[in-house]
Length: 428
Ligand code: ACO
Image 1 (cartoon, helix red, strand yellow):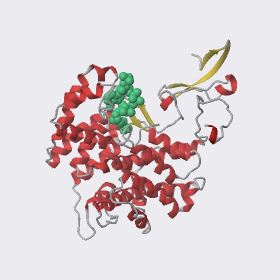
Image 2 (image 1 turned 60 degrees about the vertical axis):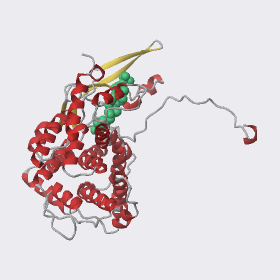
Image 3 (image 1 turned 135 degrees about the vertical axis):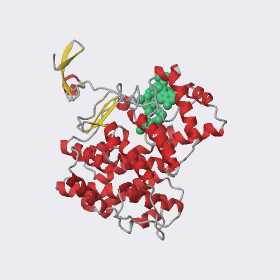
Image 4 (image 1 turned 90 degrees about the vertical axis):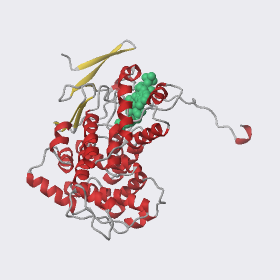
């Protein structure tokens, strides 16, 4: 089999190398195409463009396969913990018992944020969306840790920056919520695990003990695992492209949070609940909303449905659907929104419009229902996603730096005016 593809253009033959990944995926390397033929490629939304080689996450959208560093998401969600999976994606291997203990200890000892962060936080109006707040606060960490501005420092120093962001994001996220509620801030408790500590900072008060329900903390841990990484998605690509200019890790993660915020990406979990609530308030007529979603003159889309890569099923959605049943059962919550979600899914999966386009529930279709059952307010849903995705962003940033990827700078096909003389203002 040849390891190049041929392009015949204007009577000339160009040979383009074909590279192959460890799962047999093949790609045409067009990096020299412009210098040899004058051609560039165009692919809006990068639907068919590989931006990098990567060893972190493999997914097969047709078969519904998702693996981190070779381990299936099903096994990780079932047997591992969020911190262990974070270690796996960032450093490439499952940790030994000792490595995991050290990693946990290091994270635990960096959960506190500088007191001056509170002044920045208090500057936000109480109605500020927490995603905007945490994106700003993460960026502000560059001011408290100025050495982090240089990502070319020793690997120990870069690792210190990595540990700090993983340790501090839950504190910043919980504080963003507290500030929104105008409630006193709760400081981290180093005796608690990652999720319990976060839940205590979210729901506790500084003046009294807060008991974290282990069902809630375990469910949150599983949700975070399911969001850990998803290869070159919108926010991960943002993190890599910002980092490719040698911007700091904090600046790159701050940009990733902003990219995640939109309703077509991580913001979908909030949008799903708002949509389900609107359907309920409108009498619960699911078919009316299916019709709206299919109507091309109506901007309405079924939130939580469809995925750029998964065209058969999203393996995370299967795990989450079952987790939603388990968590609601264990907490004794009866949420009518869950019934509407199941009915909507059932109707959509039989509808030819959704079948033809490969539209299935994605990870966010059921995650909001669990977050609600855990007592997390709607506008914090996407923040939960950011907490889960953080190790993936870190791993993508670290890999991009270690591979020495060049600055991300796509080309374009210009379609504007040709050269024309300036027109003075009184002649326009
Ligand atoms: N409801 C109704 N129709 C849809 C939906 C939807 N949720 N999603 C896609 N379609 C239709 C499109 O209108 C289009 O139809 P057409 O071929 O007749 O024009 C076709 O399906 C393909 O859709 P695209 O937008 O081209 O697919 P793309 O891969 O660009 O978009 C996306 C994927 C953004 C996820 C899209 O399916 C969507 O908007 N879904 C709803 C938002 C959502 O749930 N986002 C979360 C994604 S998962 C995540 O980020 C964790």
